[in-house]
Image (cartoon, rainbow, N blue to C red; front, side):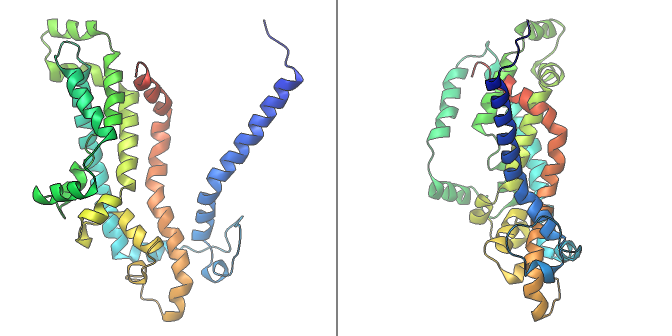
Length: 295
């Protein structure tokens, strides 16, 4: 039976449409503003005040300057290395741990899981962590950026819960046919858990792409800096030497192009994640929901 909509229903729907439209514009406009500003003529951009509803002229000079900057190129390369290797390692080891903790036949898994969850709420703090990294020889090493945050506890819980919902009969049938744990994990469990794996890839890759705090504390060699640390110097510290390295600009042009270069580097740093997200988005809701059922 189809109920006829009342006035209050139309009013509720209208309110939702208006609210969501305003919310979407509020979220999208900062990115659109930066995009418009990054391709605007610097002479017009430096005089602009307030909102920007279209590019002020058109130039790609900001992107040319950004790609001439060796600091940005080195940071970009380092970040790609940390994201690709780090995300692959994180997903692999999270899947291994999730498989182990989801097997009901193994003993004491709850005890160890409680110990891992404990670290979500309590930890040694920044200074003990710094001393630990230094004493084990990871200070100022690229390996630090791979090992640091290798397994996020929350992601482990999601993956463990997802694996635990796969019927035990599948594992028992595989074992009857001679399969071992590696075969069961990689040929049965993971293929049935593609949405959760896609969510893990998204979570870890975005986290590693945006990571800058630990690298600021534990890396001193600029050749190992990730892109976000270079961006921090350009956008927050406003370091002219880092910003305009390799640009060969006159003193008059430096101030004019500084703002343009800042907007261009923001777009360059944001595009890879924006490019990846549409391919994973279709798995996002399903993956999170699968992993969240039963806690």
